[in-house]
Length: 263
Image (tube, rainbow, N blue to C red; front, top):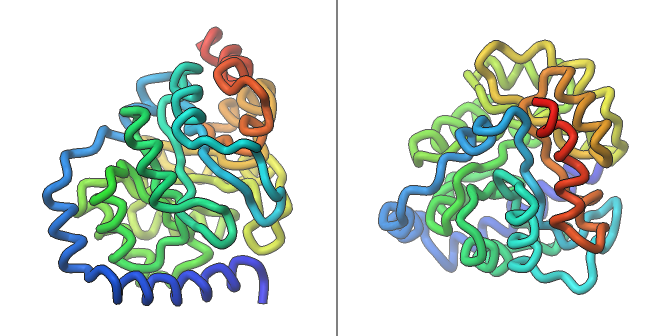
């Protein structure tokens, strides 16, 4: 069993337990009472190159990324640096995230937030809407085709943006078949955790006109941002390389400043 398969198996058990504690009906009631979230894609499109900065405690491949870890302070620093949106990890066992971190970030900033999770069930979509997310991640390699299609439609019905994540040309075609127009190319293979920007360079051209394309993972320098932009990306999602920097606002400006300056 690879890493992704193990995470998905564990996530199914977690969702079942959470459904037992809080029903989908009650969660959907809370979601319907929540205020409309800010538009995630519009925030990215407002800049020639958008930044989704990630709030992440740790990862299976990199270990602990930042000590001390203060989600609110991190979010505020990203905001000061100019990030257009934030990604907040929801998985606890593997990434150290969760609803408490999300709540702290939501209270600290008014930026659009991505519910960064291994989403397998409608319960998670209602949860995302109820706690103030603007977008929800769907990982093509973790979902059967029919489930991917249904969850994509459910996210749209909830008034959120589905960010459909792909890793190769086959997955890109699956995303396009369900009508995805907000696509993340993850440069990290979730089965091996190997990372290369070549993934973006190889499949970005498959995205249709009008699609908002995000290059995710492995982006460390302003030169990397320039390269994926030239390949067709409209935004980048960056966590590890920022979180390892002492001064986050300055790190955001170093990473994105050059491309913002020439755009």
